[in-house]
Image 1 (cartoon, helix red, strand yellow):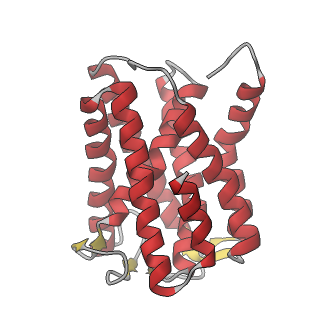
Image 2 (cartoon, rainbow, N blue to C red):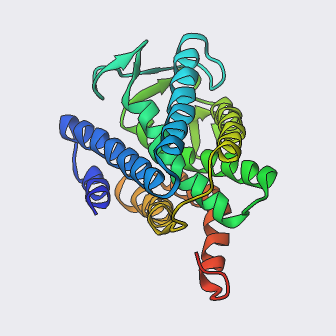
Length: 245
């Protein structure tokens, strides 16, 4: 509930208050993700997920801001989201964990035991989430791109290279997470209601916020379609009483 309230407050705020809310959303989403992971998979698996996703996320961001690979040439407004490392706010790698954990869980629900398909779904979901995230944060001035005229229709300020970079990094993460699954025991508690609910709220709530409250209709459409690759099959599964979560 706190996460939902913080995200509702985001479009109603501005300036320093919005920056604090942004950090709060990141901390809450990460806490929910790791708490659920520790409860259902054990603390070792939760730690492994955090190291893989936030560790690779931080590495990719540090390399990316220094060299332009793999996302393209961009820079953070490092004075707004708290402490930074190598000009990357530390809230950013935390956001990778908080945002990608529900996507990993949903991909696992949709294609249980099918590792290659899960990797592909996770990559598509990660890019789909960024179709919401990047336009929102760029509009808020949290980071800026050097190339601002080579993006998707309606989102020219974010270059195509960004999404290719996301796909590459997410693919590496997914392969390592698959190895983590093989190394550690299966879930102690199979409940996935919490991350599934977070995923649904992120997908549908972000589409509504972008379309109505943030003045970002293009990213509302792109993000809805991007996460819909997982969201629509998830709804169909939920409607099938023979295949409960």
